[in-house]
Image (cartoon, rainbow, N blue to C red; front, side, top):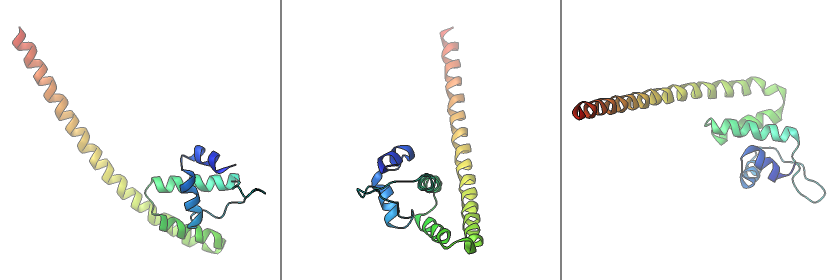
Length: 128
């Protein structure tokens, strides 16, 4: 699959895909005889994983460390698991903060809705 197809499928720009490969976040992608990147399904799954983790807020440095461990093989499974556990804990804390913010926004919306209902009721009563 060409880089433009991976870009379209993943929503990640070709420049960003090249950057991720250059910094080691993605392993080098095979190239065809013309030197054009040829992404395998495994490459695409890696791109999707990186996108998911980046969207969740994981730092590039953590993902580079994680993929470095993946490339070292099964002897790093415990270290990879620890990275994911640590990042999960951070995500759970972030979600709790987002939920608090969402609750506050919902409360404020409700306050404004009630204020509008009171004003509408006052307008109706003054018309009578």
